[in-house]
Image (cartoon, rainbow, N blue to C red; front, side):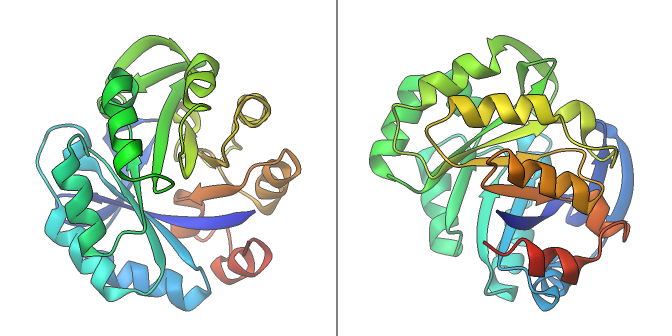
Length: 237
């Protein structure tokens, strides 16, 4: 399993939110490229970048994302408000290795199928989950879609993977939703990336034991609850 630090960008800054609420910002760093350098220096090989403003229709942080991509040689995946083919192409041109699709991919399976045909093996579908239901539009809308039904539908597509975030655990560092992740791994034909609630090495090892391929870590790295170098060394592949 590989550990991937998160860079969530809001208003040009690197931030961390708690509990899936955009009103609960707990941490803000004004230089995202410097944060990326820190994670690369710690030994991480991959990076997860999210445009929080684009995800919620509040704006765009495309220039900040470009600066991060230029500042590091890490293998980066980028998501947040990506809802058309042109933006996918632009992000690949800017240096992203994989693109993470959320709301539109979940709401329009036909569009997702077209994008997968255009970019086979390069797209990740992100399912943000609360009470086993998928939430969209930057965590603001709860759908009637059950996460395992979505995973089953995605099994037919040539994806790079699926990412499941336990929104109700996000930023709390009290452990992830292990039953959820275990169920998704069992159902999915694709590598599973887990996110939300990571607070200890024990949390990471438990996810690895359940077959999770990668894990995105935010608050625990930013607060020092986890030692970045130790995490990068143990969870390198």
